[in-house]
Image (cartoon, rainbow, N blue to C red; front, side, top):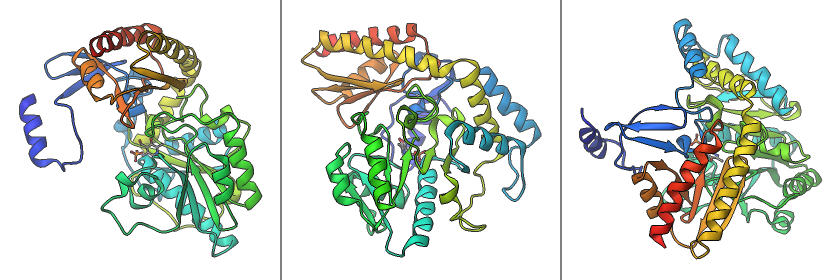
Length: 397
Ligand SMILES: Cc1ncc(COP(=O)(O)O)c(C=O)c1O
């Protein structure tokens, strides 16, 4: 098959759910990917915040190959070294007590919701409500798209699971009004990713924690996009003084190998008994060996520190573009290497023009350019991306 045939076949036979670019990618190296014609692209999307150690990182490739030579999969009926090694590392890094390993972000959130419901049922049969925030994104299963407070993801899939309540993000009075003795849990992203890189005010998470505590509700943080060093701490909640009851992870955890996880404090995790939840693939040796390698790379290569310094460089560079194009850019916001640039117009054409010039970025929430590159990029890569973006903005203006 050549590239054209790939695109045609996809159009004919893949479920028509993705608005794909007419681009066939064949391999990657570090922060670059290459298409079937050999064209090189600087990848500031990283598989939507997934490829945190870049493409084809030798240590990740080696860990996956080594594990594949031993075995790829057994069953969760047995113990394996890579799974337990990962569980131990995640517990140490997060300060939570127990881990369940799934295959994706949606599955991690689905499991977290199930655990919260099971725990709260033990307190009172009426404590079923899950409070989530407008413009959130939590996944595409029926429960997680219901948790996702955006009607565009829910339309057509009714009847939706019951018991979900929505409040505006970063609005503490609304949270105070809604959380009650009926609340099972509040589920939040520490920074909303898909919703437009929305960063709450300082103290927001602490106040939500307090509100939850006052009513005996759990706090679940969806760290699927913000976790694994992306914000300049291993987990975004670690910028604050709070400890959530449950966190969910996926995306960067496996460096591109599908894996998700939810972690909980002992008191909550104890609501599960054997048979209450499960998975065939989740936590298999291949995925967990990859995640162990990713964690080692983060530590050995100082990626959290790099995320902070390169992230600051990125924000400064984008601020300069904002000063240069005030009619096009209204705000630059970010923490570490999750950065958004709010435009005065839809961002689609800018994304396409960057792509034509060999730079992959993305637009979310219609008018927010989003930059979530690998965490091991250098300042020079930022400069390369910003130069292209600058030239595109000059043409738009
Ligand atoms: C914050 C957040 N939660 C959940 C998900 C869903 O993850 P997945 O696509 O792996 O199911 C995403 C995906 O973008 C996300 O950003």
